[in-house]
Amino acid sequence: MGIITGQMSLLEVSSLTKYFGGVKALNGVEFSVTPGEIAALIGPNGAGKTTCFNLINGLVAPTGGHVYFSGEDLVGLPTFARAHRGLARTFQNIQLFGGMTVLENVLTGNHQRETVGWLAALLPLPRVRRAERTARRQAEEQLEMVGLGDKPDFPAEALAYGDQRRLEIARALAQEPKLLLLDEPAAGLNPRETEDLMALLVKLRDLGITLLVIEHDMTLVMGISDKVVVLDQGRVLAQGPPREIRRDPRVIEAYLGREEDM
Picture 1 (cartoon, rainbow, N blue to C red):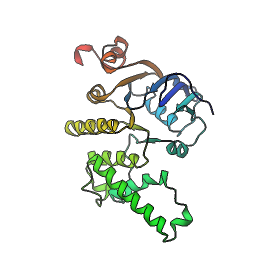
Picture 2: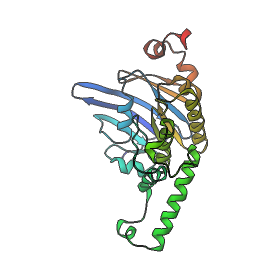
Picture 3: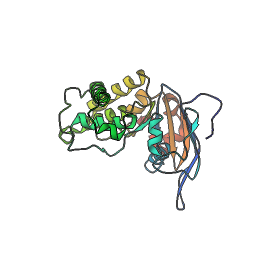
Picture 4: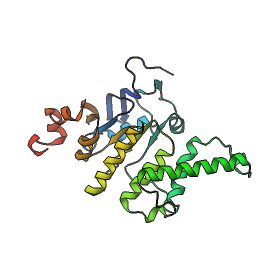
């Protein structure tokens, strides 16, 4: 596997390209994410944002280009192997186990880093019981972190919509990620819930988790991002700090609207 050189980045997307038939969903996309920052991936519908996420976490294979994570080229690695390396992801459409409790949902995220084999798990061995206690304690801590510490036994399907979004984040945190990919985490949230989400994402960054966020809510993007990458028609239109992006004439024309409306 290739090793990237030069500036140290946690994630480096290099000439990433994806064709679906004759459609160029991504065409030579390049950007990087530095450890300890919140990066936002924005653009109009159909710009290629979710396709980019799918290529980064291995749901689909690229037509060309590379995805480097901590210097290692991930192209060709399955999704579970990327998760083991510290890459976790949530989805635009909530994907919880509705019939399971809040705590049980978080515990499902823990399986990515379990070291107890399946045969040992069938036996009441002391080390298995210790692993189960550790996993439960960590799941409870993750629920506290996202503000759901008082609801471990609630059925996931009974949670309010905003709490379900938080539960998805807690389940991703159970994988102990270095980089967390969040696909439209503010979708469907009211203004108060969005403010709470912004505070949570900043807290996660301050705890050392790097974030890459797809989001249409510009209040969130401009309020907490260290870097913004703008996609348009499968290409990078612009990238830089929020204060520069919001003043870029190309971005205003393609996505943000007239400057006086911002």
